[in-house]
Amino acid sequence: MWGCVGLAQAQTSIQERLKAIQADPVALKAAVDAGRKASFFCANCHGEEGISKQGDVPNLAGQNPAYLLEQIRKFGSGERKDAFMQGLIKVLKDEERLQIALFYAANPVPPVRTDATLAARGKVLFDKLCVRCHGEQARGHETYPRLAGQKAAYLQTTIIRYRDGTGIRNNQLMSIATSTLKNEDVQAVAAYLAQLP
Ligand code: HEC
Ligand code: HEC
Image (cartoon, rainbow, N blue to C red; front, side, top):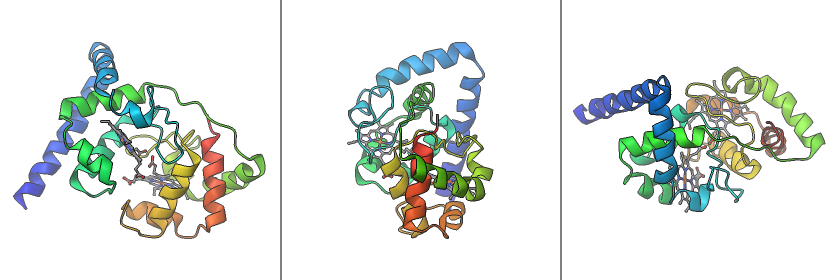
């Protein structure tokens, strides 16, 4: 019980530190530069600038830093499951987590081409079911992740994990939002999101 309170407080403070650094241009530049170095190992999978070359590895470029920190925390606590990421994240200190999140967030993410018919169908679904949290352009804000330009394969797998209650990703809002999607719908939404700038 006390342990949980302690964890919650530690998390509040890392998110507050993030806001403080973002508000200070000099500190922000220093953090981004340090993040480039601290992320050298991550580059093996997520790419030098956070643009991954594998469909099942997410881009981190352009991602909301508050969301990145929250996912790092979730891997650490086991709320989000991925054997490799859970082990790796434990060795990162708070300062490195902040630097890495700010470094990736500062990089642009190039959209890719996807099937136009599929993407058009996906837009209709996105505008109906997802836009109120992820935003008009799917760029997210605060705790909502950016989805624009994300890898289509990763998006599909992730959406299905929330929908099917696999326990790999746990979020009540996402389980509800995706509950009516058929597999073809998931494919269409992913095709729409991956090509967004
Ligand atoms: C061996 C490959 C590999 C390495 C190295 C790696 N990752 Fe990952 N990472 C993954 C995979 C695969 C996922 C997606 C897991 C899933 O399916 O949920 C992931 C997911 C993530 C996510 C969640 C992104 C999102 O959109 O939700 C973050 C944040 C992350 N990694 C950060 C890091 C950091 C920071 C490092 C370096 C300290 C790192 N990763 C190194 C493979 C890797
Ligand atoms: C009520 C708010 C809400 C709605 C509506 C919503 N989402 Fe989300 N979404 C979230 C939150 C919060 C998260 C982060 C959850 C977590 O920590 O795992 C998230 C995470 C995601 C992720 C994971 C991103 C990543 O980088 O791993 C995907 C993909 C996603 N949402 C797609 C969708 C799609 C597609 C829809 C519409 C069918 C949708 N969301 C509707 C709130 C919402």
